[in-house]
Image (cartoon, rainbow, N blue to C red; front, side):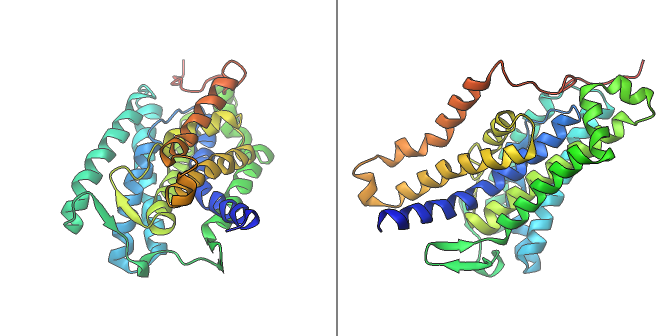
Length: 303
């Protein structure tokens, strides 16, 4: 493989790897713009990947599996929203609970459903087919869907009255409430939307990109997505750019691990740490400069 082939191969791989990161980041942007913090995206990605594969194999359709994964994300978002928005609970603890729940459910579910120890390969018959096949790999329709969702979310968030109401709930819920805006409703719906996108990204992991189910499948991508959200300054389009950057290093680590010739020069174990090192460096570089919504993570109670 010459230099040009390597560049094209890794660029296509970066677009492929960015999908779950971008979907989760964009969902987190909307949730936090409304004032609700959710650190449970790691668990949502993992559980949605598992149930997405289950729904796909039962129905025989990868698209049903994608919808099933998004539905699981929606349910977890409703749970988190009910606790944080309506019960005025802490925003961090429910997210930790979702992450721990997912670890238990998937570790138990793989042998329970498929009878295998720790891993299940998703059949090719229920995996999403690429819309374009190239010599460098297939291009998934989910790449285009992710880009459309990103720009549509950005437009709604910053160009419509609905987006203004969502942002007002995160910046100044007291003023929003005085104008007749139901802060609880918009916060709840924003939380559910964010978790639904993460659920879609989780199902993509098992039904498209990786094609397998393991109890470590999410591999920190939920936390990387949160870092990408901060990196983007709570902006969906910047989250798309940041997701591509993180996806590039994520894909690069996978590519190096499957190329013995490259491993002689660069150990794959070192390259595998790059997505996480980049996350630490970027987040460390913007600490103190990133400004979240003023009421981000704060329960709102009407006086």
